[in-house]
Amino acid sequence: MVQLPSNWDVIVVGGGAAGLMAALELPSELRVLLLSKDQAPRSSSRWAQGGIAAVTNADDSFASHRDDTLRAGGGLCDPPAVELLVREAPACVERLLELGMDFDRHNGNLSTTLEAAHSHRRVLHAQDRTGGALVDALERRVLQRPGLVRLQGALALKLWIEAGHCCGLQMLHAETLRWLRAGAVVLATGGGGHLYANTTNPSQASGDGIAMAWRAGAKIRDLEFVQFHPTALMLPGAPHFLISEAVRGEGARLLDGRGASPVNQLPGADLAPRDAVSRSLVQCMREQQLEHVWLDLRPVGRGRLEQQFPTILGRCRELGLEPTSAPIPVAPAAHYWMGGVHTNARAATTIPGLYAVGEVASTGVHGANRLASNSLMECLVFARQLRQIEQPPALTPLNAAHRTISGLPVPTGEQFRQLEHSLQQLRNLCWQVAGVERQGSQLRQGLKQMQHLRQQIQQDPWLEAMAALPPSHCTSLDTTVCAWISRAHDLRQRLVVTQLLLEAALFRQESRGGHFRVDAPAAQPFWRRHSVQRRHQPISTEAVALIS
Image (tube, rainbow, N blue to C red; front, side, top):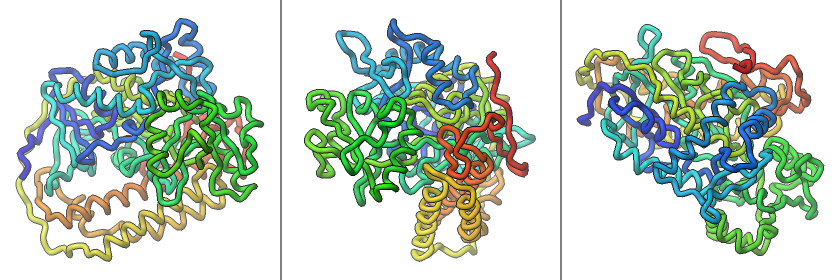
């Protein structure tokens, strides 16, 4: 049995930038447990190349950053949340510098670059591994925080809701299934890009935090809005490695099969908003019967490429490509989820005691389409709001008795293979029916196909036994059963979130931002509302927040 206390002031779920910053910003007197799924950190924020948006130059302004964000968001940003982001961003930059973040500099000043839909050079970066540098800086300081325990390889399974209040969660760690009590739980689990077959996200970006919150009764918003990054590397058998749009900000250009620009008709061309660029590339690929288009990095110049984008060059070279001498193959891939668990300006969800920070949250900042490099800053700004977290209530000690689960069959190798097959089927289905272009009839058919996949896992005996384990008990499991519970639970959570995504995409009968319906290609004024999903309630809408 793992000798870990059962009672905590706050449990933070997720080891990326949002979770790390949340752990750092929570009041220092609180005892904090930081959980992450993997033994080694593999969060999406660590993979982020582009940068962090903040007004740091004299020729820039809060009004400009705000207006760019609102414009990209397609009418669905909540202006108070955007105001909070842009005004708090410079202080967050200062905080990062205090924490040891090593931003690129030019002549002693912070270096900035231009990304799509920004009207000023306001994106701070650390070469082309800004996310990795950020996570490294935060991790160094997190390990020094008094009262914090970091637990890796820990899978949060289910939120503990008592009298309408979140008071802990169920966890699988070190072959032990147990409950942990907490005054508050902070979800920082990231997005759901890995629901798609083509994605720039790591495998743990499965939307599981959204599934946990929805099962617990929290309000979920705007799940139909998924941002597809236009330039993911597309090589057979290789991961869809992101080619940051910062390279287009420095001069790289997209090319179709004839060597012409597939985005020349767009205002802003190569630096048009990501949703518009992705749609143009998909349409070009369909018309020219291409598996991908090309990105020509040569206009950037070899010297600047080597200096500013060493990670991209290194990854391409590992795969046998030389971007300084020939264009590279790229295509759109699922990248970022604008929707999530609805939170207010204090990062609180609709369930008392439950908070959400980062991509798992719907703060109102991104609207229907995220402005480039606002996401890492959103993690920081809303994590800092946790400095004002309500003092967790006094906890009743939890002393769990050990219970043995017996009489259930050990899963076979064939069952594991079938599980993996079902997972890949689900990812392919999501890409086919809820990708860059969507259609009502395909979404309805996709929801029907999900019924079959859901039946395979719905009554799994080990998942049922796990759900039935009361907080007063814990149990030890062998390695095979732990692996099964982890993977079967992952599939079940993905099924929940994929269904919510498809239902939201079917519900919104218009096109706006990252949601494009070929059977309803125009935005409609009466759809300028958030979609809302709650368990046991029909999908509905709510108004965009007014300026405070």
